[in-house]
Image 1 (cartoon, rainbow, N blue to C red):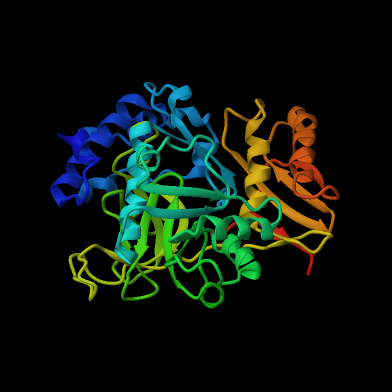
Image 2 (tube, rainbow, N blue to C red):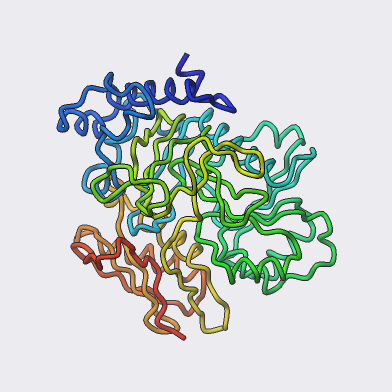
Length: 423
């Protein structure tokens, strides 16, 4: 029953509790990390009977996972060659490879389509343009193959004008991507030939008010904010009647707002976001800290004026992001650079066993400094890979790799992953 409940749409409270019981039991039985976590806490998995019991479980952070082989949170039943894999954005400063089975990947994309429906309504066939890096192994989408939904992946490593041209030919109904990537498109955008565009969905980064206004002005369409992560997918979607109010996707996860000690804080009090995935067995995430902060807007069960009774949170606060400036005047989204550098780091066998913590600093127009927590004997091999990756962005761009033992905390809980010192 619980296995079916985790893939159900419109989960009831009973479905959520069933899914939690199954995910927790599976995580304990089949992953080294959660078995050790529960045993160290003297906690039996059968004590977790539903959402109300989750605060008994210690919080897991990406940094804690980074101190051990990432396979410690991968199910011992997972067959890696059959998994869909996506790299986290590294916004907390630590890179992690998230693995999903094919059904989990399909379900996660289905939940995103359901979120689109909340803001737009769906008329098939539907064309969706996703701007930014593509998953290493995206799902072979049956719906797309039969022609009901068409997805175009638009990458920005090259000419932005070419990307805009691709969009004009594709004529998407929905344009989605990180705000920094969408802003680059907006600089080249002209409205002619794109009359089918109906909605702009910003996700993957914090959407500031000024950025929202710039995007709305450039594309002349409504801009909505989605809160998501590679570990879970769509965590929350913006209310269709109230900008800045996000409804939690309770089909995907249980979201808690907690104190530094991992205890739930009162409604209206800001705290750290932790999530429990309701459908992931391949790589379970139970009380997993995303590194963001928010607060619940009202008591549980209160009905929003849009009609939804789902929990509502304020748009999460996030971290500063900087565009990088190249010698030819092009601006590079922090998400694009993060993807290029992150994949180069992850691809090296010397680092593949652990999550990689790193920071990117642009010191000069043609110089990028990458500080990474890696073995010193891996530096030479990684330096070559980073040189190749950065020159793919610009022939003049040079990368300097510096192995470090860690990064000092600044007391804010935030980490600036990409920093440009070029005005």
